[in-house]
Length: 156
Ligand SMILES: [Zn+2]
Image 1 (tube, rainbow, N blue to C red):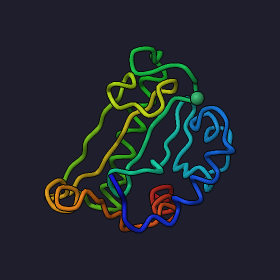
Image 2: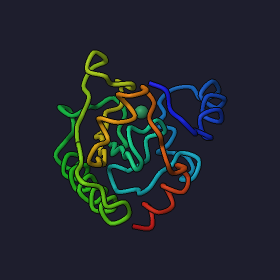
Image 3: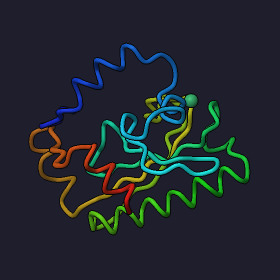
């Protein structure tokens, strides 16, 4: 899958080589702007996916490394759920999508890019977003720069 107009990508590829370990742990300890963090809760936080399926694709992760969906404790599960709902509401207010997909990838075979630090995907969807550009050209257009998305969603 290729993406058009991705000015952040080169920057990411350059810094990915330097970044050792887990990107969620780095984001948890790092700078909001650098790691596209939208909101920090008590036990979990929300950040933009650097390789989004659509504009505003959010990830909600517990701070704790080494747990996925089945291992969340009660407090983490409740906060991830609540932050997912708040992220959905912020996306609805800022972008007005037609729907959402929410889900977890557990295990590499299921598509998890980072298997050791579980996270909930919150993906806004628009009517027709699956049957035009991706199918036609195997290219997805990401129309808004991630830094601007982060700013708008953090405000919401
Ligand atoms: Zn981690």
